[in-house]
Length: 304
Ligand code: NAP
Image 1 (tube, rainbow, N blue to C red):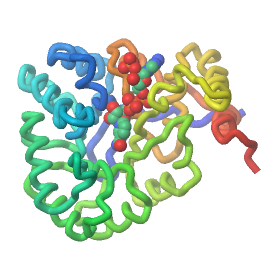
Image 2 (cartoon, protein in one colour; image 1 turned 120 degrees about the horizontal axis):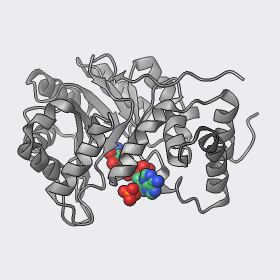
Image 3 (tube, rainbow, N blue to C red; image 1 turned 120 degrees about the vertical axis):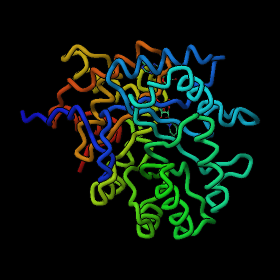
C-alpha cells in the first residue's frame, strides 16, 4: 500500500523565503479564562519548545461581543516585553480588518491604523505575516493592495495573507499586489472538508499560497464527536491513531498535513501538554486508503 510522504520539518510561507514550522499555534482563545501574562508565557514556551515556532493571532481575538478587542495581542505583547529574546524565536502572524460593531473594514485609513495598533499592542516593530481576517466587500482590491504594499515597503509587515476569502477575492487582491500573497487561512479539518473539492486548495497550489488551517479539530469536535457523522470521522482517524500510537487529534493534524498543498494546521488548544503533543503529527504516516477513508466518512457518502 503506497504511503504518502511525511511532512517536511520546515515549510515556507509562499515564495517569501520565510521558513515556518509545519504546525502553528493559534491564540484565538488565549485571552479567555482569566489568563495572565505568566499563563500566556507558559503557552508560548510550550509551543516553541515543541518546535512550533509559527504563532497566529489577530486584533479581534479576545473580543467577547462587547469588549476585549486587542486583548490576545496585548497579552502576547506583555510576554514579548518581559522576554524580548522570544521574538526572534517565532514567526509572528496577525490579522485585522474586522472592526466591531462595523463588521469588516478594509478602507485605506482603517487598514493603516489597524496595522499600527497591532504592532503597538504586540510591542514589536514588525510582524512576519499580516492577514486580512475577512473580506470587506465594499473595499476595492486595488486600494487594499496599495495600503498593504505600503505596509511591506515600510518594513512593518514582512509578508501578506488572506483568510476566509473566496477564490475570486483572493485572485483579485493578488492581481493588484506588488508583494504577492503568501498564505490563505480557511477553515479546514476532517469535519470541514469543503476546501478539498471546491478549488480553494487548488488555487493555493497554483498561486503558491501556504494554506493555514483554522479550527483543525473543528473547534474540538474531533476530540468529542457527537453526531453520527462526526463519530464516523473519529473512527476513521482512530484506525491510524491506534496503529501508530498517537492520539486522534494528532492523527487529525497529520491528515491535513498529508495534503500536497502543504497545509499548516493551527493548533487551537491553550493547554501546554496538548500544544506540545501536536508536534507528534510530523511522525504519522498515511496511506492513500486510510486518508480517503477519513474523507469518505466526512462526506457521508462514497466517492463516485
Ligand atoms: P481547534 O484545534 O479546532 O479547537 C481547539 C479547541 O478544542 C480548544 O478549545 C481545545 O481546548 C479543544 N480541545 C478539546 N480536546 C482537545 C485535544 N485533545 N487536543 C486539542 N484541543 C482540544 O482550533 P480553534 O481553537 O478553533 O482554532 C485554532 C486557531 O485557528 C485559532 O487559535 C486561530 O489562530 C485560528 N482561527 C482563525 C479563524 C479565522 O477566521 N481566520 C477562525 C477561528 C480560528 P483546550 O484549550 O482546553 O485544549
